[in-house]
Image (cartoon, rainbow, N blue to C red; front, side, top):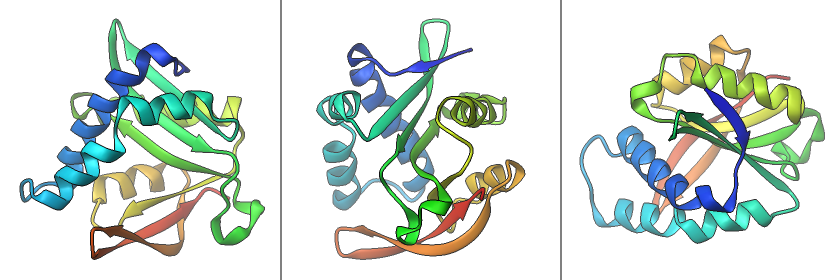
Length: 163
């Protein structure tokens, strides 16, 4: 397993991986217009190319051989409750479902701590029990709540921090 910074050449595969993981996690009841619109407009090659060029975001991928199996995007300029004490935001951490529970996510967090810094925060859906357990095992605790809006629907997320 190799963890490295994302490159422009990764962006198409990052879009596909992100759509796959997001749908696997959040579309358990099936696909509907709001979900399709969200994933097809959010997880695009162009959006990942913007991250590669961004001065405030960094992205890293995990490869297993020639296959991309994980991604993490961090925002170095985003603060929970406007408090820098919580560190940078982990905007996205996705691992291909076939590689979950095999140490990939833990390896990503270890890489982040060495290359970006220890203190970080993130949000995750209150019903994403696998992610909540993963983060708890890796030193994160719930410090607040945030709202995720999908079309006109509100979904509550936990805010977690390792501070």
